[in-house]
Length: 167
Image (tube, rainbow, N blue to C red; front, top):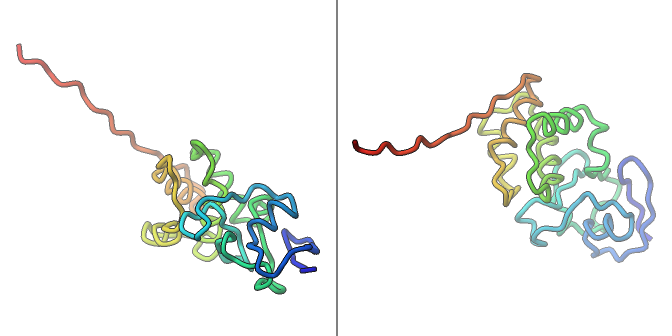
């Protein structure tokens, strides 16, 4: 048995020490908000917090966690940063397909927690390990800025003008 602190609860896992945290969360604990994407820590869909730091759960063996606290998307709203990020995500209408969004939110919440007013460079660095196949990156950035400042972010749209015909 491996004892973990998951979302503030002590959980005893009947798992081998080399089992990735992702599969323990999904298959044993039943917390399915954390998603499988690539399995090699490159896409960020499986991001959770380990003592407040974003980590890729698809490659993190449960035996290496020890007494560190695991926070998943199911509990991130219990922190001020997580709550503000989730509200901004809804306000800005970030989600398209939604598959990567739990990982995106977890990375963004960790960023806001450690850097309350991030610059564009801070956002780029913190979110560089999260891939969104629907390319909602401009909305993700706007939501992070809104969560940080509390001010609504306006997204700009580019509209192509129809070509004029020569008369």
